[in-house]
Image 1 (cartoon, rainbow, N blue to C red):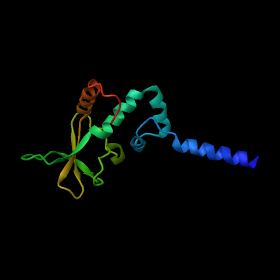
Image 2 (image 1 turned 90 degrees about the vertical axis):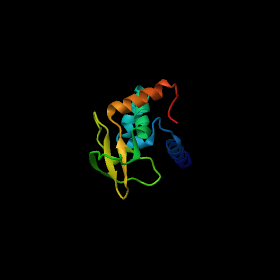
Image 3 (image 1 turned 180 degrees about the vertical axis):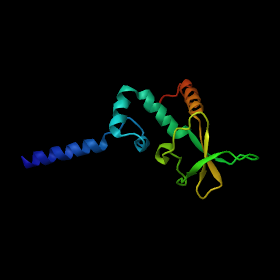
Image 4 (image 1 turned 30 degrees about the vertical axis):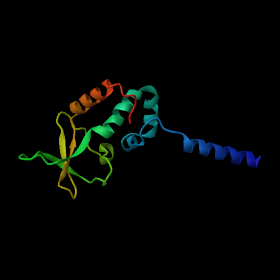
Amino acid sequence: MKFLFAFLICLSAALHTFAQADYDERLLDKYPAERLEELAQSHPELIDYWTFLLDHSCKVVDAPVGKSPEIHGEVKLKKGVHPNTYALGLPNPGEHARYYSIRRSDKLLLVLSSAQAAEAYKEYSNKGVGGMP
């Protein structure tokens, strides 16, 4: 009986460990797992959009030559890791793209406006690409 109980606990733990989420784990920086699991079933297109934003809503750029953009704060980025706007806690940029200075760098983080991000997603989804790379 003890063996069966221990076996069932180990089996349950193994299944839980190997269960794959239907969403990018970077989304956990903004949303609770329960919400993401629910949305992955009921609105997978929303999960796809949020995942797209993780990879395409911001980029590291050189400061524009000849003009000084408005800087909305400073961010600290890990070297060699694509910036995660959710983990950085950046607000939704709204109607205008936003620039952030990058700590210990002469580069800037450019976060696309909501409209620019939506347009980029529209182009992405119109290409017939199935799922995120």
